[in-house]
Amino acid sequence: MRYKIVTTKNIVSLSSGFQESQRREPGIPRMGLIYAPTGFGKTTAAAWLVNRENGIYVRAVSLWSPTTMLMAILAELSIAPPRFPAQMLQAIVAQMKLSQRPLFIDEADYLLHNPRMIDAARDIHDRAELPVWLVGSQKLEKQIAQRKIVAGRISQWVKFSPCDLEDTQRLAKELCLVEVQVDLLERLHQAAKGSIRSIAVGLSRIEAFAKVQRWNEIDAKQWAERPFFFTRQVDYQEE
Image (cartoon, rainbow, N blue to C red; front, side, top):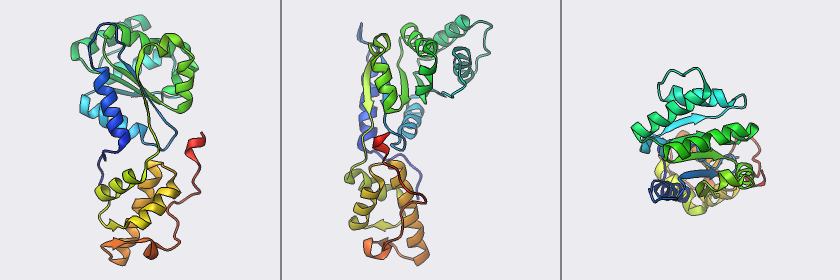
């Protein structure tokens, strides 16, 4: 398997949304939200965008507080944290303005555990006047929509949809070192329920099996009834 970012429809949508958030029109907010069930490739896509845009990336954790959140961002900026949280926020804003780097916060559902954290993200956006993107679940989208003061700052709501068959075919073509026939890809797509993570796992198993058999291509008949995944798959869209 090759390791690369494949331009699925979700990647195209994210790239377009981010470009819109970079526009500097007066009065237009520049926050963005990427949301989807687990397994739909949000974190991988965000990492790709962070690398492309030289962004600042932090991953929220369940034990974060407003202070540790600010300290994590400062660490990514290689800045020693000042003594007080207000000074920390000021240092982050100053460095972002200087470097013109956008901020990405993954696992942003955790920010809602303490309203002061989501408010801090909003403050950074307002004062730095640069894109601040949150990455989280469908539940996060619903929670933010209820917080009007935050929802009003988000101009780009990017929902990751299940991969369709065309995406699955593109993934196979660009990632696999063997040719996977359409009939087998159709079965994999149906079993994966649109999860790009599950599709990648299935493609990896298909390729490994074909290599053992010394085949350059493989179809549904050759794969037979072998499982695509190591564990029972859940319906991600029900989360």
